[in-house]
Image 1 (cartoon, rainbow, N blue to C red):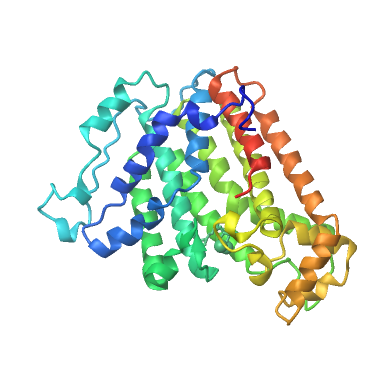
Image 2: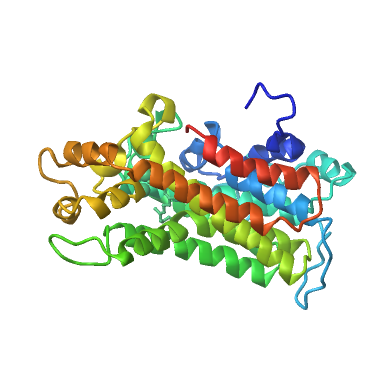
Length: 383
Ligand code: FPP
Ligand code: MG
Ligand code: MG
């Protein structure tokens, strides 16, 4: 509530860090090939929500004041992270001063060090890596979904074509991997590499609406579980594992690491449930991307699944992915006349409650308040 004077702004808590994020991401994405450079940086020009990096930074700060635990494989955590990218720089070989290959300027580094910040350089870099992986998945997603718009602008597949959008996504994953390897933390590398695999697994699960391979599936207790598993892989895996990685980089104890993971997992599930609800309730103009797109794409998300539980006739439509004339309109009407949207919101709220519960033993801090506020924001968001 913007009118409330005591409202906590989670962004304010990490505002200084967020200022460097886009700049550093652009630096990580520099390529000597001018077209690749442009396509790779395309989604960094529009204002994203930066939910994932913000969560990593808040989690880093909130766990900085919890007990430490020294891991066997712990890297020298205060080490400066080398950010120059100089591999495969065919077009720039021998030209290290080319702007595309400039390392983080010493100006940035000194600001990082000079700040009395409790966030480690490795945790800042992790925040950037999460945004790179997320943006890579959006580049690929927009090709798969034949998307027309993202963040109120033509999506990359429209602006540059499918081939360049796919390749740019791969490039982002490559640069994210380089940055990840340079953290020199095998457990964190494994976590984020698993996220990339999970994103693909989730997307494959989404190619089917249910585990049943029938023309007219019936709603069972497994239906929602399949959807939630898919939702974890597609949306909550990145958020939960990067929160876990933030705590690991900060040498937190196993209990704190687990709490960070559970916070991210439950918040991630809530985030996607709200996303699936907004697809039914918000105009495309407000969303910055077409609304009502899920049914058009053949997708049965939570609101429809809840409606299906008490409207068996939806089974045939789910089975043929709403492909027959009038299917989309009929399904939409049934959802709006059912309790599906209310049930989706209630389920999202229960995950948000579990996310808050996971961090309740963290010492009080502005960053912890920020994490709680992120939960409230998920439930209030309209885009
Ligand atoms: C957006 O969902 C998409 C995702 C959260 C993940 C997509 C994952 C892939 C395409 C797998 C392969 C990619 C990589 C980089 C491993 P949405 O389509 O429901 O949301 P939207 O409305 O924002 O498009
Ligand atoms: Mg999409
Ligand atoms: Mg998609």
